[in-house]
Image 1: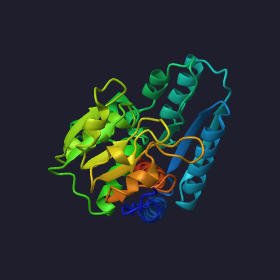
Image 2 (image 1 turned 30 degrees about the vertical axis):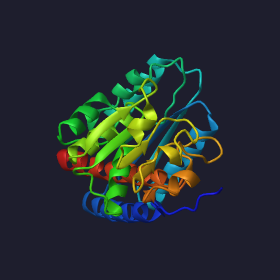
Image 3 (image 1 turned 45 degrees about the horizontal axis):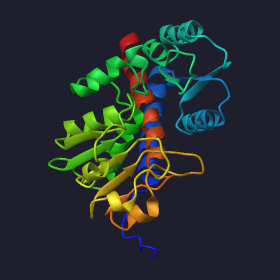
Length: 287
């Protein structure tokens, strides 16, 4: 029998639009004051269709927000050393204020080495160990964009993490781990789950706030959802499918993000906001 959805969808497009509009205003003011527009450099390795689409979307949003976009397309055969050299050159270029290295970059490349070539002040995607440490300790820096977008989405829908039990399914360095740290900083009690978690379903059923970031289509179902939980689906799989079975989960959750249209727009909005912030810091220092 088909379950009737009761959860309210957490649409990310409206709050993302507000963030982008604010970023556009800040970018225009920065340009008026300094004569320089914020500039985001995007680096793409190979021609993976999903990555090409993501980068195209991000560049289009940059234009709408008054952010200049510089694109560097590298062949799939690029070596780690060549990629690091490219990223290092961008880090040293004063006309570039933010750097986005689109991932994945290919199994033959040391992705971490490439990320670490990004100067901390230009790490607007929040992928370096410096950014993770600063975020974890509550120090100035840039957060990973998807986790940062998730937190802003929770705020937009009036979800207060303090005192809640949050369960993060997934432990990637740029999604699962930082999402948990940001929730912890907001006084949630955080549990990380992963492929070796014993009785995963039991852990998930304890979640007041569930972050699904495992990268497997419809991996979590309604049977695993605590009634009234807030479900954030940060997965995106082939066929516009998330990591959560939306229909069955929506019958038990109070709030749930759709895929697409939930977390994705917020990720890009945070990237734009942090690029403008990075430009402001750098141009102020240069002055």
